[in-house]
Image (cartoon, rainbow over all chains, first blue to last red; front, top):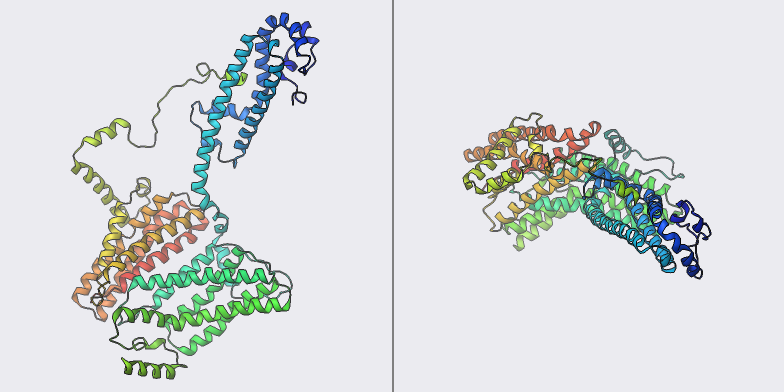
Length: 386
Length: 217
């Protein structure tokens, strides 16, 4: 290392005659010979040497430009974080590099000084040593304090910033994607682009929760808002996150090219059809209308998701597995939300209120026409047993 | 270190001035004096601040008092009173009161946190607690609506009372949403206001639904 770097002192020093005979990097062996030659010149060297060392130090101080700016710009001992945190830690890397370089230089100088200690005056060594030590200590302190503050700030704000790029949308984009989620794509030989955003899906899940709660209001029953709300939130979020994870796992098995965020986004936008269907059929209670909406609206959104997945999967068996599972889960979820969810809720209400009323009797509008006969017989048997 | 040595502070950069933070917080000696004042003065000062913010919510103008000096006393009082009034839904089962209070409480605060996170992620310039403060204070019209609903329900629970309650709750819901939009939408980039207003709309819709479907027994 000592041979690689020119010693700053000696590059800057105007060579007085006794010193010109010195080789630029005095090896240890010849150190003793240099000592005797240098000693008469050391007295004269101390004064220009101080300036030279200062000049030499200015060479290294130029590397410390950022450090200087911090000291000068702040004028205080407190670290000014706004100079340090916008460059994504690069100034810390600079400080780290400078720190490292300082360490290497001081090691190199330590070697050189150990080898040629008598070459310098004791006073000169003291001055340089003092400045070196002071600078190193200050640098060390600033580095430690800065690192501590940065890690604290980063751990505080990093959690939000991870999600920030997924929320970078405009309202027109959200509207366009909502409409697109109902239109199945035709081109399935080319991988379709999926926008990895989370704002739209999150808002759609919350809207679905609100619609489920809105559908809960019936005129005569006593409603426990809290329990219903917890169930609604749990159902919707559980479906979104759970089915996304499951399909992502299947996609991993079937070698489909889709990331988790894309899957969350795709399924979230697929809930738009569910929202429309439930919103309409909670207000207009015709079961045939619900079946039409289930097939048309639910089918369109399912077709879109299926087409996008097919375009990203290779192989017939894999496509069949993946898309069949997704289609089945999606359509069955809509059926569940319209029919069985009410029964779950009524089950909760019944367990809370006691067995004084037979089940499925209060909210007649939600019992499907198709299975009415089955339900009637079960109700009668249950009422008979009670 | 010639560069460092050149930083002769006394020559080039005069170090003078005050080491006080010019943000409007109290200077140290003022804090000392508030420690000695009677408790009633302290409480009255806080109550006056809360009351002033209530007035700002009821007549929403574009003032920044609500944002600048945020506090969470008002939201806490409103949330607790709303949760207390929403209790007593049914006298049948014995475990009715507890979970309901907790659910309302959790839903209000969880919803406010989600909306705040959403507005921050969309690039809002408002801080976390400022947003919580505004959302909590804008529950005031809905609390007033809940009070009116309870009074109406004391009179009877027929169709007419349902219509009255529906109208009142709808009006309060619109008022709450407009009030919070007036405060929060300014802190967003102008083309994204709709993205921030929609979750607020959903949040107050859920609270309004809870108020409207409340039937004491």
